[in-house]
Image (tube, rainbow, N blue to C red; front, top):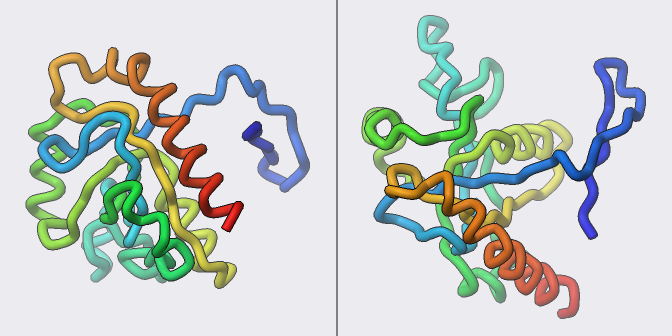
Length: 173
């Protein structure tokens, strides 16, 4: 069973209502389908803009543009999904035109497969603490699909089962 632990602004443990935690990862239309697994080769922010200070779009000041996923340990499970870039931002992504514009303008050569709100932050923490990291995410919905919001309900259990299969394979080798 997966649980979420929380800390306040002073790093003191705090309670998290487990039944209110939701994990949603949106797929890029035409690249992935709801229920598929994505392994992160790279992670970046899609809504950070410090370009007036000489940074690339998506780059947090004094950090790299991309946080590299460490795929070496996971070579035997990569066939269970697709490998590519995951972009993170402060929104639930529903606007296909806006997403395509961001990808085509700033990340056109980066094989962007998924969008969420947390993967780049995990990658950034791993980078700062020099911990090898890879995100294994299951696509809950696809931006721009007709029933994007409803897909989450339909594919959540399928996606969770696929993630559990991948983790089981990793942990029992």
